[in-house]
Image (cartoon, rainbow, N blue to C red):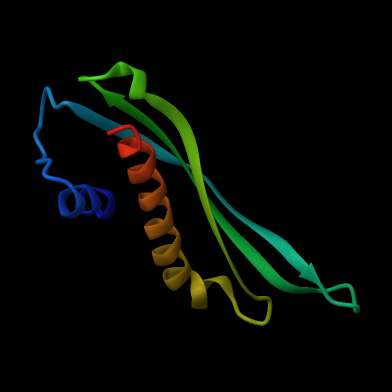
Length: 110
């Protein structure tokens, strides 16, 4: 929904069910946690959460602008916190970042 909002707020495009000039489709392909920083004690001090979204973009007016790629965003949080306590805020930030990446890739050639 946030990606739809970005296009609606930043362009004069309108959403249609069929036969649109631009088509976006995709899926979440990754949701991972990684130890980001290790303290001298050998334990993690920060954890990185990463989300990957694979997107297929078709520009029916200019197929040279089509793309099929994966976009990623990540955020770190202190290892002293649990994922469930920070997850919602981190995901909100990452979704905004990924939406901006997709929007910029789609409209870069306008």
